[in-house]
Amino acid sequence: MNLTGRHLIDPNDFTIEELKRVIDLGLEIYRNPSNYASLCKGKILGTLFYEPSTRTRLSFESAMLRMGGSVLGFSDSSTSSVSKGETIADTIRVLDGYADVLVMRHPREGAPKLASEFSSVPVVNGGDGGHQHPTQTLADLITIKNYRGEIANLKVAFCGDLLFGRTVHSLLKTLSRFPNVSFVLISPEQLKIPSHLRDEIILNNNVEIIETQSLEDHISDIDILYMTRIQRERFFNEEEYIKLKDSYILYREKLTKAKDDLLILHPLPRVNEINRDVDADSRAKYFEQAKLGVYARMALMALILGVIE
Ligand code: NCD
Image (tube, rainbow, N blue to C red):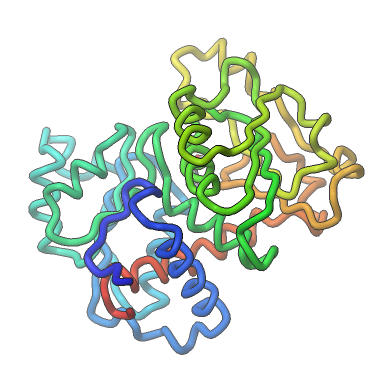
């Protein structure tokens, strides 16, 4: 298996074996970071963020710096030539000469894919509109592997904005390819997962999916609870957002019936869908998830840069 030079735009771009390679290397780096501190010496990461980000951009930066490399880029497209009307194709044709690997976040679905078609260096999708977010999936998978030992035999509940949540789309698509994983999809009627995605998952992988509006009905028999924020910026109308924004709020008392080894995950940022009293529960792992995401991104970059086989 050789990931050198590969783009990561959609989670299906990598086989299960390749995803496992990234996760296992990520955990190895997490456990022995000093062995990898100079791995990317002389390498440069370019960050092209056309949409706000805290974790994704900074975790990529941290990942590159922790491997001895350097970073350049922008986190606000109004300060770049995009504001003068430059196309993505032109921006990429220039930036691939400035950096060895590029990560792009863009409000438009498909923008990172387009970038990859013009780039001579690997391009990573850091989130495109309401579409996909494959490196958040790496952060999710490394967390599951770290706490459960394997990514298999899981009942996974996704709760919140399943329509616009790109982290949900990517993780669902990916987990459905792992052995014996089933899903409980909890959302208001208006925020159910796109039907084409549901059909694709069921058709391709023959996975069991329950769609429901009730978190309470399922809290006792799930292994992972993936909470998500209602994505205000993707609503067409503020009234609709206000109506739906507090659809689900997880309080600690709601967890009394949950399994002892439940994993509570969230891609963050949270607004108020997880009450702060849950943070003290040992099953809450969202901050660990954000941290492990750095190591998954270290492994990804090391592999696509070809500094490790
Ligand atoms: C998510 C995103 O940007 O899609 N955040 C992240 O990358 N960790 C989730 C969100 O914004 O709600």
